[in-house]
Amino acid sequence: MASHQPQPRRGLMLPVSSPTTGLRATGDRGSASLLAVGFAVVLLGGCLVGVLWAAVSIGHHRADAAADLVALSAAQVQQTAPGDACTTARRIADAQQVELRLCQQSDDSVAVVVAVPLHLGALGTPVVTGEARAGPIEGGHWPGDG
Image 1 (tube, rainbow, N blue to C red):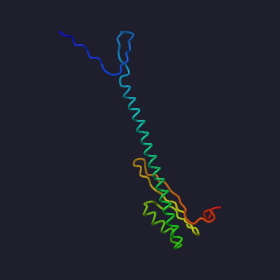
Image 2 (image 1 turned 120 degrees about the vertical axis):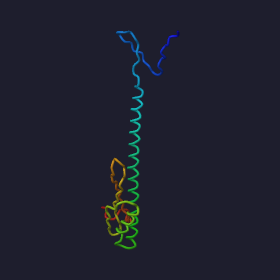
Image 3 (image 1 turned 45 degrees about the horizontal axis):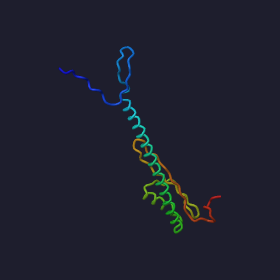
Image 4 (image 1 turned 90 degrees about the vertical axis):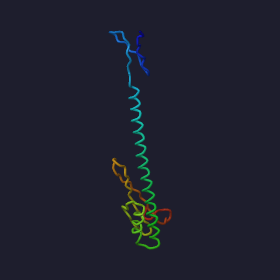
């Protein structure tokens, strides 16, 4: 009769001697799995931070671009038909799907503040703003600047 010998286990096994029995056992089984899970969690967290950063950055760029467009359009209208600049600013802001929070007209310039909501799912809906001012430059300075 042939005796059945146990097959050796594969993988990283470190021999550990027992002082009482002298038998050798293996330790640290599964520690590489924990290390891999920890690495995956850190990597996933880094990716999440990167995606959030990109979303906020895109929101800021969108708000700034919309504010520029609204201010330039309003200033153009103010040059041709004084008094209607903020009405045009509101119409352009609505077309750009942003909220016009402030529109100030001076003699020949228009300053605006627009808001863009960021939809971040379970993290909420923060709002980013963009500001712009448009009009002719007099002597290299904006009208009203000291």
